[in-house]
Image 1 (cartoon, protein in one colour):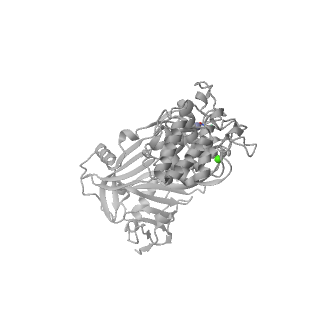
Image 2 (cartoon, helix red, strand yellow):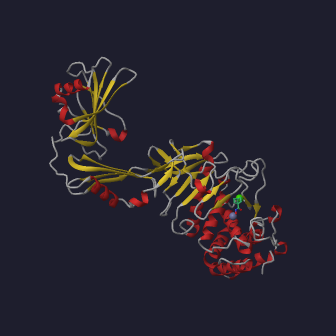
Image 3 (cartoon, protein in one colour):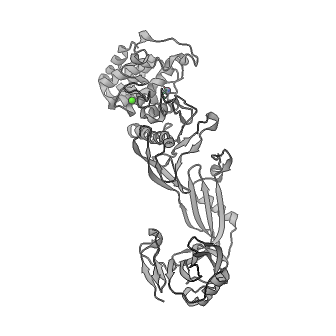
Length: 528
Ligand code: L5W
Ligand code: ZN
Ligand code: CA
């Protein structure tokens, strides 16, 4: 027989074709020859017409010298299909001692008259006729060994999720099958174990475990990190960190230096009880549809805000513990709002006139994630002055992330009108907010009173931030604000306490002149 060795076929995804010989492909193993890889054979085969499975077997017997197969023992028919051209394709599983050889199929193709036109697949013509090892462990033990091998417990992965049709389904799949594992010329009796789940991360673990001694022969998660692209709310194209799992891409970012992930969901207009909704996916890794725009920006800007906190302050996610950053878009109906719920972000679509999709503005995303930072640091109580500080710190870090302007939410506010915004650090008065203590509004501590005017009186600390940043610049101001929030402020801090916390932070980091600049900024707004 005339053996030819050539480029890796399964790496390149193409098959080699020869006439009259069997051509062996070389596996992608750095040029090392693999004796029993994939073949593709085309020739005028000896033998009679092949019109049934029985006749395929006879064909193999007649061509015993070429294929070195005993069809009754070495092959099991998986399927036979006739296509639109009238060609029939017989698919066989290669067996050794009645056990399937993993990833090894043999295909026989005939034309409409039953002439064999090609034979391809994994022949394993040099394989032993049976495997000498004995099976010492059972399926269940193999599964247990597999769970031990990966860094997830079975109970963590055993997760029920709702399907798009609203049915509950468990995302965990476990399989354990006895196979012959082939690698580097060695045939080993093994279990092929598959562990597939979507929580705590998308995984499709493929393991081969020696059935005699439990040795892990191979273990790999074949789900992949990927880089996709998407269109944002404003029609811009951006690169996205995604994950490939089960033939589709997820807005699921595992690339950040954190334990957790950044993941983005669509709630299909649902409310709190249906959070987080469904993972946003795309089979082509191109998130270009109208429905995907809000998710593209929520995902992208969550990554940008993560990077901001990490790069500027070494903070690892909102909790500094690498916690998952989860966002849900298309929340509610015409919802003109966004929020940190206490464990994730939600974004409304807006009603189309006051707001368009709220995740389309990076200052809003930074505002919401900063609420999460505040909740895990100063824990400023969301009412009266501490609540207005909570709002103000969210607006101020919204500015640090999007420092091109002093405006808040301008990218998605009143989509039909340009130049306006929800609030402004430089000019709170233009947005019905006080910018001095002599305009402080004593409002009721009720929802209707905006919990003592947390979104109104925030104009006063916002204006103080504006004066501070103008005087000290962004680089120093952001360090001062971060230090005040994470080191000095407490749940019931007042405006005066914020002034003191910021003065102290400025003193710690940059000395007296910086502290004086902070004092001046708060003098300007009447907070002493
Ligand atoms: C933008 C609209 C209102 C900012 N939250 C806010 O406290 C807003 C959420 C999203 O001020
Ligand atoms: Zn807020
Ligand atoms: Ca802005």
